[in-house]
Length: 290
Image 1 (spheres, rainbow, N blue to C red):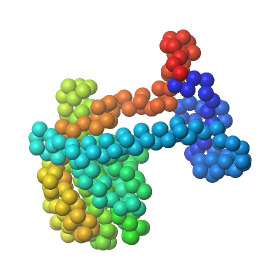
Image 2 (tube, rainbow, N blue to C red; image 1 turned 180 degrees about the vertical axis):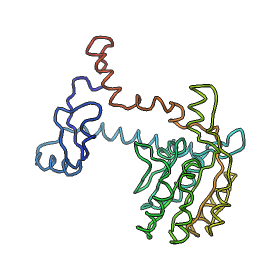
Image 3 (tube, rainbow, N blue to C red; image 1 turned 120 degrees about the horizontal axis):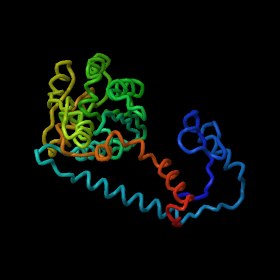
Image 4 (cartoon, one colour; image 1 turned 180 degrees about the horizontal axis):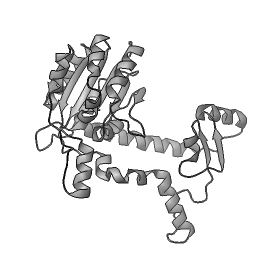
């Protein structure tokens, strides 16, 4: 909670200045350029930054990240014997080069990927949720940056939107790897329907053999059904790009977005929570904790 703190908002898009809580000062400018100008204006004035506090934040963040990586590497299979999505992401992350370009796509799987994958350049459907961008973005990125590793990590539902673009990848010899996390469902909708309505309608898919389709277009492709086969399959695919791995993952795994439910995601925006908390504090509904 920020109490009576005042905000300066900097954004290079109008929505960055208007959305949620308004700032006392609002600058329509590139954030990086603005911060550089602020530092130059400060000159040699002594910094009031609490560096020990900053170091402690960094240490705690790195410890959380280390624990996350370890839990991902050891994520158990589902009761159905299928691979946990985090196990797949850990295997991918271990093989990403420092300058890798990663495109993540999907619904429930995207939620896993946003937390589980990190790279120098990262793209996903964005806040408007324009799923289906994975394969075409990946083809374009690999042709634009042929000397960099390009990996598309997508759910099976999102992959279906533009799956035919694997033909484009083969024809243009686009050097990318497409990894389809195949859980046989629009899984985030399955979770939401189950929690909200107690039944599932029209959102379960079949565990289609996407690798067979890719091979039909002349692409190197494999279907992976066991966690112990992931490492070797990824290595082979990286050596034969364009390539596709169809990895069968358990639909039992539940992402953070799947747990909160689609309808409630907007209410989880931090700024809204801060505003609500401050209003309650100002009206005396809750005490102020410092």
